[in-house]
Image (cartoon, rainbow, N blue to C red; front, side, top):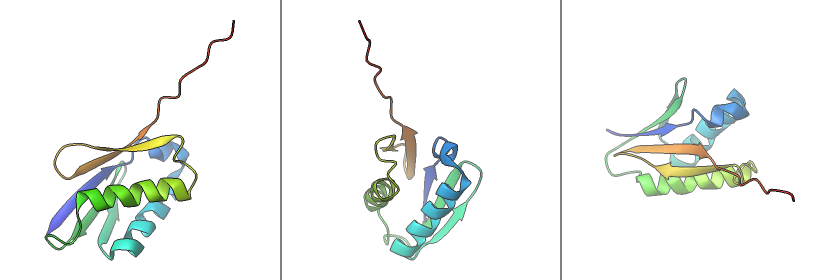
Length: 95
């Protein structure tokens, strides 16, 4: 059994509904078992059925679909861990 974890602790600032919809989106696209906990989403599949790279593409697609792409990005962490982090938006100084 292959298990990929997605850290969504920063995405929870948008609300719990966003995380639930993310879990449903991944379940629909992959057919995998998806579990949600407080700060992460765990995707479980057969060995070799789902790659970390494809899951990263799905996460980006979901952020674009929900119009959150301008505020969040997907970062690959350690083995089988992806993180959704908030983008640092530069502040322009007025003179």
